[in-house]
Amino acid sequence: MALITATIITRNEERRIAEAIASLSCCDEVLVVDSGSTDNTREIAERCGARVLVRDWDGYSNQKNFAADQARHEWILSLDADERISIELANEIAQWKRSAQGEGASMPRRAFYFGAWIRHSGWYPDRKIRLYHRRRGRWTGDFVHETLEVDGRIVTFNGDLLHFPYQDWADHLSRIDRYTRLAAEASRKSGKRGNILRLLFGPPLSFLRTFVIRAGFLDGWRGVLIAAAGARYVFLREFRTLR
Image (cartoon, rainbow, N blue to C red; front, side, top):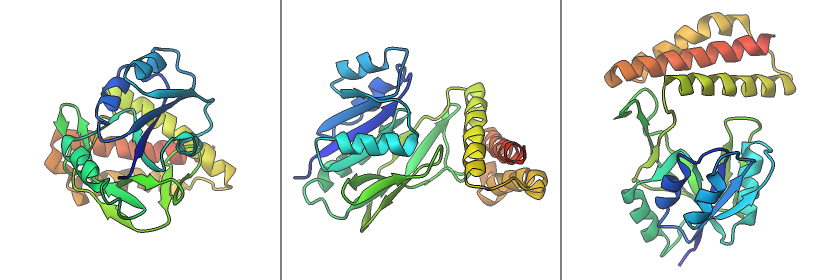
């Protein structure tokens, strides 16, 4: 029987951490690595049965790799505080533990956005590799958009990883602001510069790709917001890289 440590990196997640931990019944340990929360995140996580470590923020990849290194078990299920393991996925993982095939596993992620599950707009199935053997997997990438690289076979689950990314439109915009600043910083450090053509044509092309090609129109007015937010992200990323 394979044993799994679920890892969650946090900062000021007191409103969401309890539900995230509660969804992890298929795991044998829950480890929270907190980076200086000023709310009750750590206390709530401990009350919910998690082991909590504190580490200064060092980037998404480094925090997640640190969490995996501190786990008591070799198999890691990496979860964000705004995600939940669905009952269907938890059952699949519990069944998988009996044979533990592959070196990693991917799962579809379904996002809940302004009161509805999003089925189009490029947001679904949005497969993510989140379960892996820590000797065969490592998180890479600086600042933002970290990626899990696994050396070996990836098996697939059908149950959804549930995602609750934004509390409201203001929260969505603030995330775009933060991530574009991080992306621009990463680009400058790697020597990449913004492009005026991408600044001019990137945003409308992004909107059309999301709303038309990826069938965002089927998500109704939520699809419009998703496409508009994507266009805004492209514009701000290019604009801030030009400066």
